[in-house]
Amino acid sequence: MSPPVAPPGWSRWLVPPAALSVHLSIGQAYAWSVFKPPLESALGLSGTQSALPFQLGIVMLGLSAAFGGTLVERNGPRWAMTVALICFSSGFLISALGAAVEQYWLIVLGYGFIGGIGLGIGYISPVSTLIKWFPDRPGMATGIAIMGFGGGALIASPWSAQMLESFGSDSSGIALAFLVHGLSYAVFMLLGVLLVRVPRTEKPVESGPAVFDGVQVSARSAIRTPQFWCLWLVLCMNVSAGIGILEKAAPMITDFFADSSTPVTVTAAAGFVALLSAANMAGRIGWSSTSDLIGRKNIYRVYLGAGALMYLLIALFGDSSKPLFIVCALVILSFYGGGFATVPAYLKDLFGTYQVGAIHGRLLTAWSTAGVLGPLIVNWIADRQEEAGKHGASLYGLSFFIMIGLLVVGFVANEFVRPVHARHHIPAPREATADVVQRQQPESA
Image (cartoon, rainbow, N blue to C red):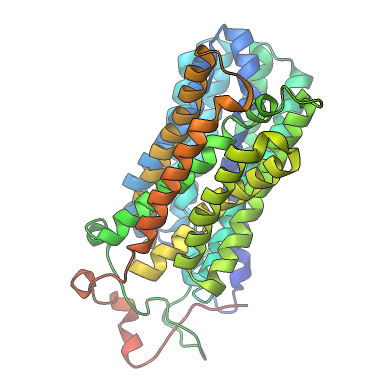
């Protein structure tokens, strides 16, 4: 499938909505917890078993992004969005069948494995295209799209809950909810497939950087550079710290203030989770846009350095002040989202735009690692502390100090990031060689 080239006069501002239609859909993954209690009740599952589809989906996201990144670069965003649509939607349809016949392995296969492939391909599908359309503001452009992944749960969570209330929370009701999800997301993602375009690179424009201007490094060469692995550490540490709070947010705030005069209710804990989702989403566009002004290395100094400070404040004083706990947690989650949205632009700065989608895909294996590491640290330590007879905020103190250590490791790794050595550079692609005498950039509105 040839990438669809924008006709003359095409507005680049039509591309972010195309990307958002995909990211808002696959962002449903963050709302999986809505299905956990009904599945446990209907199919007799444990909490660990009901989490398996989500965990496998995140692992497959990282793996499919890593192995499919080159194909995405080669075949273009429309091909990638089409593959994402087919995999993500069919994952729900297979899960619907699994719920209907009460075969949980089909839900794991559908949502976790097949749907997870759709997550990975869909997540990276618009990245390099957006960067090429917005060479002047790559942080803002990728932030708009990746904001959708963080905000998808704000739509999917109440929508899924309402469906389960209407259809019932037994196996047939769950199956019908999965079916509606699969069909609805197919239609919504199709809008992105039809709308997306790649920029024309043969037409001169009046000013601005070229699509293939500056340093260019192939995906194969990029993973051999220390810069790639420093960024891998940076992303892994930042995500581990954020997801450690995100995955256990409701019970954590309840535990912190269980012994206070005003304990946190179930409703208030759910509201806290919604606030964290909003901070996650806002950070993706706000902080990534800020990175266009102050630079990628500086913004990651904020994410990692200020993030460590927020964790320290929670560990030392969090159980004595609800506002302090909430504000620090919101800031940490905004850094979590911002880290995701800023890293494509950081990669573009270091490796150029030539195969930035493929490089980004390989880097997302850091997410797969962090998705296991962060929750494992928080949950394992909390379980051990509870067995030792501790309760409340003391369940989390040690894990918070470990998170601070992880953020310090990420901060140091970020400091080691330097421009890529010239031996890794490649000549600009054939279609961009005219840049030697004439600078180009994608058409804009």
